Image 1 (cartoon, one colour):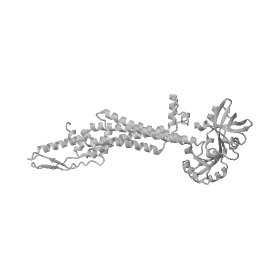
Image 2: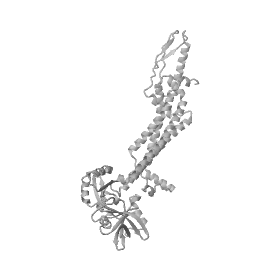
Image 3: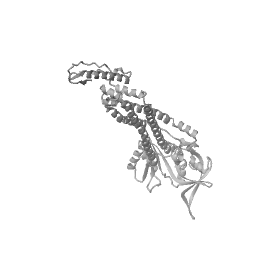
Image 4: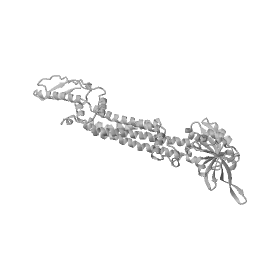
Length: 483
């Protein structure tokens, strides 16, 4: 770099050599400010000038700064113990704030993912991916030619299994206790291929359902509400009555409880009762018809596309629904909650990240003399700006990595953490009558973690721009006037 030192006309060289002496002091000060980085500085070889020169030329400081001296200084400022300990305290608070915000985001989003996945799994334990129903006379119409419809459905390569079913409503009565219920008639062997109720059996098995034996498998909450156990009798009243001379009389049938299931979804555990499909056909006077056909797909995420295709290709008189429409309100609510929680917790990260603004502003004020010395020795404004961008970025990166480690640690061991807190404080985090599940799930998705980390780093970097720009605008003459 080259300096032009302007002297007074008439050859007054005392001003010149005074300035040279000042430059030597500047060099010494920079050595002190950046201790241990001798490579940043070299000598100040001067080309002598005549006494009568109007100006003289000081040949370039061959101290060419290393390509990454901004990085070295930025890292040194992060590690340095400052004269003002309050600045170090604010830096630590900013770092911890970012860490806690990132950890909270990872934990909450993982819980929302787990809740969504667990809810979907438990709902699908008693709900098929796609259901094809009779609709010739409106909702609940019997599907008469169901074997032909089943053959047509099997031609789709996405179909993994099919199962016919009969569905109706009834009122279970045990003494003075009565509970409304959804009655579903199933073929045990076919049902086990399209749903996972068998995996959630607490007592008994679906294979125990035999035609003509009038056995029933109840949800545990329904059985508890009725006060019945396996092996006991319970009566079912159906709306399809028997016509007598005195009028229509509701049909009453006695069933034997042969099993209990618990899928962890309150809607199924408290309302659903399973009987054999042949018994259901006789009970609801369907003959050989069924209510519909339950379909399991190889990929449940293609349920909407498959059902839309069948709506266009199957003959009229059929109603088609899939799991995304049957329980749309639940999944939309969970997705909305996930978005809202992400926005709210991102604001926490933003507040912590923008604490860097006040931290770096105070650091810039504390380092004005050092900045002025660097500028005097030829550092560009962009280089000064990069020093403080590095410092702020380091705080943001360290805070983000700490939050990432803490968030993953808690999210991957959430069941143990929640269990410990519940035991110590005697509280319950999940009420299944409200949240439909009985435990707090967690599912860490790499895409969500990457989004959180990049958001935190972006906010941290954004927070460094104003203080760094302010540092680059410092006037060396003004900063060194009272030094």
